[in-house]
Image (tube, rainbow, N blue to C red):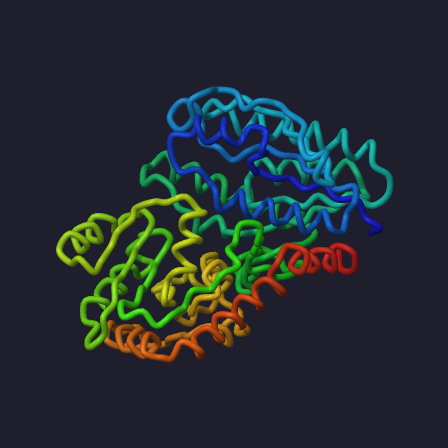
Length: 403
């Protein structure tokens, strides 16, 4: 490829992954880590000299992380890319300044030692990353900046206090100014462009499925007891209590509901499991165990409805994971899910509890051959068209032809 690429990230290098996990006190960003590694794998297939500049996304010391320093290491030399983890001082209030200064210093070093046209791809609207990249762009005319936006800043959550609201407002305004100086976007949905200050060249990558740990088996069968499974965040706004209600009114079919995860609806789910032996709550499980349970289920359900503006600007990541299991999937139609996905799953528009319950019953009563064929086609769709190399081809086309 004609351009040289630096990927600015917050992933967890394998060399310090266990250390990061053991030092983290809350909310380890495993999903963001997995997605970033998928981008690295995909970009590495096209750019032999890919450089990854990395500042792991961990909580601040001392409230959310046990140590004040994230160490400096080199990584990735055996994986087809050059990885630099400069390390940073992780003290709350100072970490973002240190990350900004360190990132700017490393970008300058990379730019001075790299010939030809250069592109920085940034993962997420993290202010120190974007500020360092845009400031560097002003020093090097041949440098372009492309931003991956997995979330819009205004829809990101956080503590409900006045200090956080002031910080969030400052960050939002600063990001809006920097967005105007970027050269392109990689968005989860095309609707996200509506919320950005200026139109730029963009491509849509709703997600990436990296199949390194997926099972190759499909276990849809004719067991008398059917298994409905939900894995993920137990948030009321994601509709998990609707699934619970729909299961409770399921008639004339022997089934059990298994729920895995954590969130603000956990207490209601635990109470339901205590009162109904056919409702099983497993809590938070390792990803490998979750994937195993998915392949053993009769039906995977995501009860998130289109209620709420945020659904227009988001893509539920579990959609890919569910479809890749080879097990039938039931979802609601959401504006952020591309139409092609609905060919490979069962879907609903009506959000009533009875409609959800009736649809679950209808699917569970289908013959195994139909369900296995549905699951197989869904799995093939994800593995063939949503893998890192296929999805990152869109980024290559963007930066080689439009930036």
